[in-house]
Length: 609
Image (cartoon, rainbow, N blue to C red; front, top):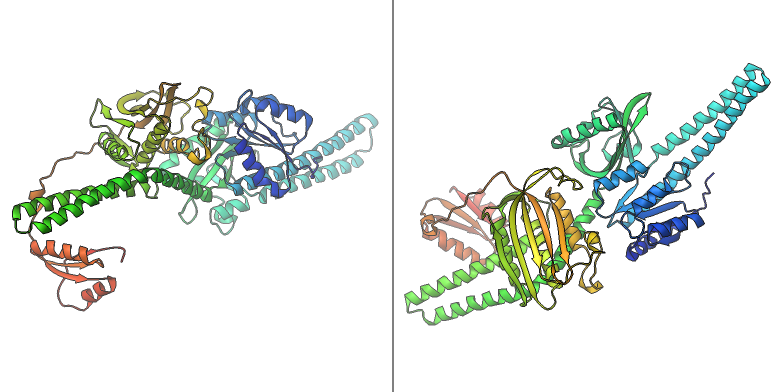
């Protein structure tokens, strides 16, 4: 029987910072720790000690985490449970772990609360499982003994039946204890059979905002899946029942009974329920974790903005100098209309530059969900190159975007793409301390089904392949396969968090694309970004600004608390023939609209006042 006092955890990870993070997070709970830097050391430690839990990373030198699991061949009778750490493990890796018998996964970077909860949950499950197995084993021994006793001694059949009934009752009690364990588990557990929910535990009731189990039982599991993913989920369930193979842990967006979206990490396995095939789904609410990951991405984005700030400030000061200078000259030569007009045109041009610079900075730093739109990568990347030239060191040369097709249309999130390219260019600058060259080029290629293997949500078809190359120091072979892992970095602590390339990898996945890398020591590195080519195009045309000016009629209400902006808007609309009413705030505007007998045809209002 399992010793409840055993609180030893074996941590197998080649990164000291990860091992330290785990021990720091769990030491308050009274655990003892054994540390190993690779799978071989883990095997040696397992021979000497008997931990209650093993936390193992997949990617390590000497013997990897997957090889370690294959060697120990986890069984239900083992005195320990296992949690697998994943950075960017492939679906194949997780399926391999699942086939071996491991179903508990923790993504890096991890949240402390999630780590502590998962550890407590796995130790509790193992404790109950061991106790149940202990009772099952001894009950089976008793039953076997009774059967042998009947066969060998031909005892009274009634006495044997009474003893057998007693032992079966004990077995039923063990089943009841197991059901209580499932009911009180801190994860959602549901079973569906014939497209109906036939069992839900308390956590599932809470997660899906139900009052009781009757609100959920009998419903189609697809009722909790977004309609866009019905076909995918149906296919997965059919495959699970047909092949007897479960679905590894993955993240899905689901719907609760109120129609709200919830983020859930789920896995599923085929089972028999009431002697019929069914699917058991285990889900962990990851909504808060997703919010934390978004905060982490925003934090890294701000780190990049900080690196760009020096160049932006210098550029903005130059623009302001031009505006103020032309304004002073204009005041001095007010008697010469032609010269005044020329200088006002220069002021207008400089103001446009300032507005564009502010717009680029706001687009880069804004915090929001992914917004996909069809864009011409050739135009967007060229604008970003012009922006980055002002922010990188003077000894860094950026070669303009080269492409065989000037209309490289892709469905992307503009903010995310700017962050991806900015991260890669800042990394390239770091790899070239004595200066060098960054080259960005693009091409349209066809991706086959074989090329998609190992990448999530990537489908065959036409892709735009962006290449970002530098002439820096290159990446050593022994670490190139780990550069996309969260927190992995070769920089000093003050130079970066090790999250930049991890963010690039994650953002590419969200675009249904992927990133690869090639590098040679002392020659340089090239990152390849693969985006699905858009099926739509955007037609652009130059507009004659002079022909856009039209006079009109009607009453316009301007609501603005800045006097300069209010004066400019009023003057411009006066020139176009409109009758103007003004208000300095929302309250004044409402009074004008309610208490006057004239009709307002249009309201132009500031939002922040």
